[in-house]
Amino acid sequence: MKAKISKFRPNVVISKQDMKNKFFSCEGRLNRKPYIIRIIILWLLSFIISSILYTTMQEQGIILAFVLTLPLTLASISLGIRRLHDLNYRGWWLVGLLALCCIPVVQVLAIIPVLLLLCVRGTKGANKFGQDPLAE
Image (cartoon, rainbow, N blue to C red; front, side, top):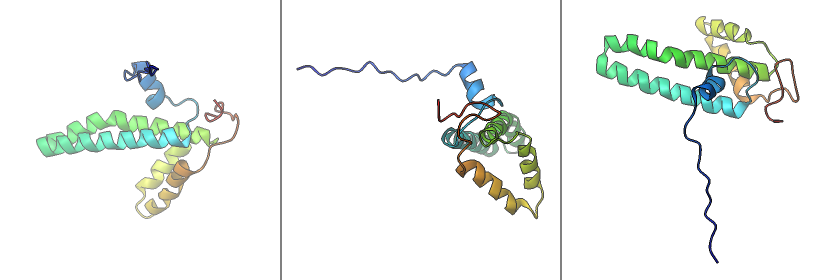
């Protein structure tokens, strides 16, 4: 009896449109698991880029690292907006959270909304930002 050989081939190639939809779109909802995975990917990329450029180029590396990590920062913001949409909040709440992080005395309190983004389940069913991503 011959074993069947699976013809499963993972789709490794990611199109520009797919990347834009996954990382740079501010529309729709994003549940916890993809949010956490994508944020970790962005943090790792940012850390690697910054570390390599700073150790190899010193002062010029800081400027180049800032320029190269700017798209990663924008992607993090759009992911945060979509995660807030999943919780049925407008993306503008992220501005308040970022402002909270800039106030030295209150920075400790900023961890609470971040933990909520990571831990709280999104709205069940459809909300004003779209269908439940877990229902699809």
